[in-house]
Image 1 (cartoon, each protein chain N blue to C red):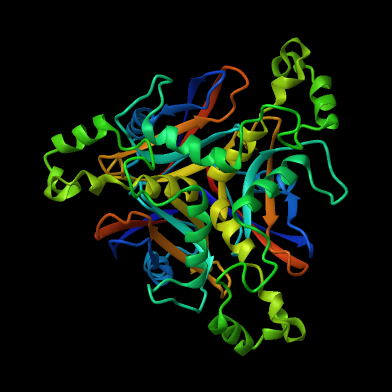
Image 2: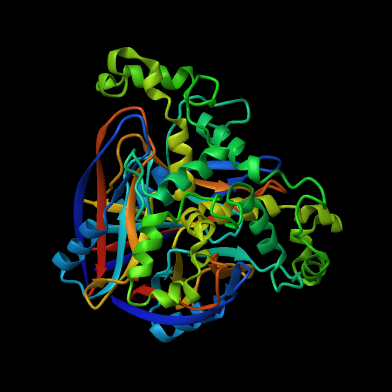
Length: 173
Length: 173
Length: 173
C-alpha cells in the first residue's frame, strides 16, 4: 500500500464561472503513482471551488464553456443568483469585511479597498452544494471511468482571476 | 493495510429515474474484504448516475419508488426539469450529436438514429449535484451506519434501460 | 500505511438547522493519528446530516448562525421548504409511521406518539444533496486547507435536539 500526491495549478478567470477539464492531469498522476488498484481523490482546498465528474460535451460557446457547463450555470442560478449587490446575500457582513481588512494580505482580497471584491457568496454556496472533492477508482493502473467520463475543476468565484490549487491523492497498491 | 474491490451490475429502467437499494451488496463486499477498519467508497463510473446515503422509507408508490425518492424527484425537478425538448437545455448541441453519430458504437447511444435518445441533460446535471461517489466507514468489519441508514445507486437517465456498473472500494486493515 | 479513526459527539438543537464548526476536532484527530501524508474523510452516519467545507464568516445572527449558513438555509429552502405539514412531502407515509411505531425504541422517534415528530423530510433531502461525507488532504501531518477553510457538520433535522456522531477517518503514512 502506498500514498501518492500531486498538486496541479489552474488559472481561472474574472467575470465568469471557470471550468477546467483536468482529466488528463489526473490520468498522468495515476500513471506517475505506479499504483495499480485503489482510489484517487481529487480535492479543492478552496471554499469557492468544486471538483465533479461529467461527460465532455462537444459544443463550446463564445465564453469557452461546454454546453453542460452553460446548463449547470443556468440551473444553479435559479436558486443561487449572482452576487451583484450587498442585498443578494447576508454574507459578507460588517464583521467579515472588517476581519478581511485587518488581514496582513488584505490587499489580495480587497484590491484598492473595494468591498465589492468580497461579493462571492454565490460561489461559496454553489461549491458547498457540489462539494470540495470527488473520489474515483484506480483499476489496473488507470482511471476507471468510461470513455465519456471527464473530471472538471470549477472555480465559481467570479470576482477576480486567480491561480488555484487542486490536489490529487492516490491510495492503493 | 489492504485494498479490496467489488463491482456490481444494476438493471435500470426507461422512462423513469431508477433508484436501486445496494446496502446489502455493500455489506457483503465489506464482509468478503475481511477488512475490519477503514473506509468504503461506492463509485458510479457513469456521468448520469449517483450514489447517496438515505433512510429506507417504507411507503412505495405504483412506480416502485420509496416516498423519499418521489420527494427527491420533485425537489430536483424544480430547478432541473425533465429533458423533453431540444429547447430544455443547451446540451446536446450539433457538435455533440455529430460526435456521437461518428462513434463506432453509435447505435448503442442513438437507436434508429433518433437524436432524442441523447436528451438526458437533466440526468447529467442531477448527478453533478449529488456527486458520483459516497464514502462510508468500515468499523469492526461492518458498514458503520445506523439501523435506518441505506445506500442507494440512482440512474437519473430516463432515455433507455441499461445495465449499470457500481464499484465498491474498501481500504483499511 | 495506517488507518486512524476518531469519533466525536455533537449536540444539535430543536427548531433550527444546527451548524457545528468541527475544524479544530479534525485537526486534533490528524495530530493524534501521527499520519503525515494521506486523506482524511469526515463522515456523518446519520441520514439527515452532512459534512461540508466552507469559509468561516464572521457575522453571527441571533440564532447563532454565520452569514453563509443563513444564506445556505435560504437557497436550499427555495426548493426544499420546511416540513411543516403532512402535505409538504410524500414522506413519511402510513407504512413508515407504522414501521417506526413498531420499533422497540419508538418512543425515541415519536415522543408522546406525536407523528409530527417524523416531519423531517426536508432534512433527508437536504443531506442527500450535500452528501454525507467530505474528504480532505493530510499534508506534512496537517489538514491541507487554506487559512480561510473550515469544516462544518450540519444537522438539518429540526424535530428535536440530539447528540450526533461524526466519524473522522484518516488513512496514509
